[in-house]
Every structure is written in C-alpha cells, then in structure tokens.
Image (tube, rainbow, N blue to C red):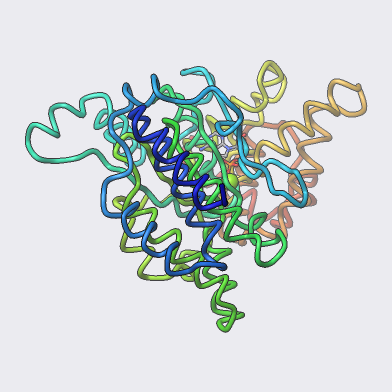
Length: 372
Ligand SMILES: Nc1ncnc2c1ncn2[C@@H]1O[C@H](COP(=O)(O)OP(=O)(O)O)[C@@H](O)[C@H]1O
Ligand SMILES: [Mg+2]
C-alpha cells in the first residue's frame, strides 16, 4: 500500500472505533505532513477539521484517550527539549497575592467552570481564554498555576520565545504539536511571552513562517475547546497584534504590588526569619514600593541566606539594602522613610541621614514636628 492508502486505513480504523478525538489528532498530523507536498489536500482536511468544534466532552475523551506515546508531552525534534513545561500543583499549594479586583475576577473564572451547567442552561459559556498583562515578576505564571490547581488540571506553559528560537521552519510545526497536545487533554495552556510572535512578525514581515504562527494562534483562540482554558501572558501589550488581542475573552491586568501586598509578601518570603526582620517591616515596605514580587522575594531570600550563614545581621543587611535603594527612590518618599527609620530603628539621626541622604534638619523637623 502507498502512504496515502495507509493513512486512509488508519483514519477508517479510528473512525469505526468512534475515537473521534484521535481522528482529529491524526488528521491534524496529516495536515502538517501534507502542507508542503500536497497543499490542496492539506487545506481540505484542515477545513473539515475546523468546521466542527474540537472536542466532544471531557468524560468521553478521557475514556477514549490513547495510552500510547502520542500523548506524551511533545518535544522539539532538533533539541529534544520539551516544548511544554508542565506544572501539577495540589490545590492550595500555590496562592498568589492578588489585589481584591483580581481576586474577584479570577474567582469568577474558576466558578464559571465549577458551575458551568448554570451558564450553559442560559445559553452562556464559561470564559475560554484570557490574556495576562503585566511587568515581569508580578505573578502571571504563578496565577496560571493557581488557576490550574483550582480547576484540578495540569498547567502547560509554552514559552513562545523558545518556540521562535527553534530552527526557522520548525517553529510552526513545534507550535502546532504543542497546541494539538494541549487540546487533546484537559488542561490550562499558557502561551508565555506571546508578544515574541508579534514582535518578530513586524521585524521580519516577509517571512511567511512567522505570519503563519500568528494565524495558527488566532485560529486556536477561536476554537479552543470549551473545557480547556487558554491563557496568554505578555509584558508588552503594545506589541500584540490587535486581531489577536480582540479574540481573547478576558484581559487581566497585573499591577505592581500595592503597599499591603508588599507587607504581606515580606512576611511570606522572610518566613521564620520574619521574627528577626519584623521590626524593619514598615521601613522595608516603603523601600520596596514599585518593586515586583520577584524582586522582593530575591532580596528577602538573600537576607535569609546571609543570616543563616552568620555572615551578617538584620541591621547591617537592612541598612546596606536601604543605602542601595535610595538612588531609585524619589526625595519626597525618602523623607517619610527616614522618619519611619527614626521611629523603628533606634539609629541616630546622623546615621539615618547618612543612609537616606535626607538632612538631619529635615529629619528633626519631621519627627519632632509631628504630633506624637
Ligand atoms: N502575586 C504574587 N504573589 C506571590 N508571589 C509572587 C507573585 N508574583 C510573583 N511572585 C513571586 O515571584 C516569582 C515569579 O513570578 P511569576 O509568576 O513567574 O511572574 P511573571 O510570570 O509575572 O513574570 C514567583 O515564583 C513568586 O515567588
Ligand atoms: Mg512568567
């Protein structure tokens, strides 16, 4: 038998066994295989593939899911690196600090899934896709993990920068493989650094491969199975193709941590050593204003390591840290910080002035001037 005949037999075998999801996977594979050698055939197959929603329901699919290697996490043929990073967190294991707005928004997203029946009865459907926007280190990935754990499914993270850096001509195949895999199993899929595709597209507008990548993603957002959740994350919203932007059901903006969140983060990251650093909590909270959670975490962990080694004490660590921070804190914020330091630390005004660059006169004026 020639190759096409073998494909036909395979399709019939799967179709007769009513393994509809496997038929879809197989056809998707054929589309990729024939895209170059027989584009007309590939296009026809692709059209039928897209003409029907991707999945029956998850119960059916679970029982029909093949146990063979076709369900292993896909890897790039060249590097053999796994394209998808998988997280399987127990509910309650990861808990991001979120503003009350975000907590509400994301809480609803979870409830929409848990009470999907209510929505469907009214002709509504749960949110299928969301775009996370925010600076690095504010909890986009962490929140994706939390969502997946709440929904009791794994999170797969596809780093689009990594996909893009895989050999040109393979990135499309790699992306497809990853998307097909994620569609074949109940999960949350996070397309991390989704701007990587958009950016590259505008840089090398003539490279058809990259244009196709965006097209692939566009189609997927529209067709994402209702029991899956597709997330995108970016810290460059301005680079996102507006057509892509529009297709996401929900936009979630992650801001820099607010003061209360900074305070909580310090408590969280200092762990048992909070007992030692607690008296610096207010000063540190002010000094960390405008920094991301991951920056706060990094410093807190450095403090803890130094303390554990006996290399330094809390006072020296905090003083040195503050000294380094002062250049990036504007003067109007340095004054209250100096005042706080004078309240909490027992340091002399001379020392505080030396650390903060605020004159002793100003410190004196603000500490004695305020009603206490
Ligand atoms: N909202 C948050 N609550 C608690 N910790 C956070 C939060 N955001 C970031 N972190 C800490 O910083 C690390 C990096 O965060 P991550 O979610 O990867 O940021 P992003 O994806 O936005 O760049 C996390 O592993 C966590 O330790
Ligand atoms: Mg991230």
